[in-house]
Amino acid sequence: MLCLVNYARVRSGLPPLRLLETLNLAGQAKLRADLTCDQFSHHPCGHPLKSVFARYLAGSSSYRIGENLAWGTGDDGTPRQTLSNWLNSPEHRANLLTPQFRDLGVGYLANQSFQGLQDATLWSQEFGTGGRVLERAGTRRR
Image (cartoon, rainbow, N blue to C red; front, side, top):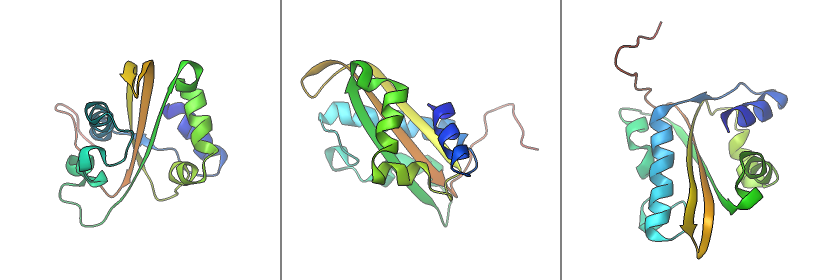
């Protein structure tokens, strides 16, 4: 998914996004909440969108965040088809091609029972800029 997103951004004259584990975890949390609440929503069980970004936003005084969600079965759940659907939706395309976004997290859950269907694939994209980048133990930024 990251390669597809960055291909679309570069073709649009934008810099590629950097994949962050903090935002990957946020995306997974969002999809699990959607499953738990049996809702396809940016606010599952009434939780605000910003709630999954808490670690990323910790200590940030200014930031911008966004989110794309999708789910489908069969070919509708593949990375290419999901990205194609997002690019053909004005709101989702705007998130994908927002110049200010620098960071991306991808959530992915396959073979799920969701909304009464089996073998559903759920996707999330968590976009951000200005958030805190947490380093892994044993690595240093240069």
